[in-house]
Amino acid sequence: MARILGIEIPNEKRIEASLPYMFGIGRPTAAKILEHAGIDPNIRTGQLSEDQLVRISQVIQTEQILVEGDLRRERQSQLKRLTSINCYRGIRHKRGLPVRGQRTRTNARTRKGKKKTVGVKK
Image (tube, rainbow, N blue to C red; front, side, top):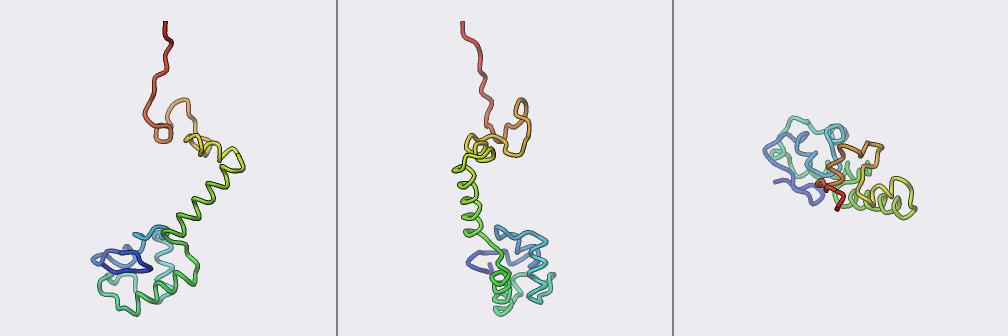
């Protein structure tokens, strides 16, 4: 497996399909990276030379694309900021409820978890 910025990507796939294995890089970003690096997107990852791998990593760093740990830390800090200032979105994150205005009377099981029946006792 090829390593770019310390992340293993599959050798047998096209480089355009292998780059999205890195957290923070999708298909459009992968195409943009390869265009800037001047690499054919149809070449297999295992066939890339060491020089080409270095060019890809340089493009990622010069374009300041956040990947893996840096991106995760950034997203985590944004959530912490929302919860610390007690805004509506932060409170929803804290309580584990949908954040973007979805209904919760029915549905929302992914965020709320397994259904808990609340009944009246006699």
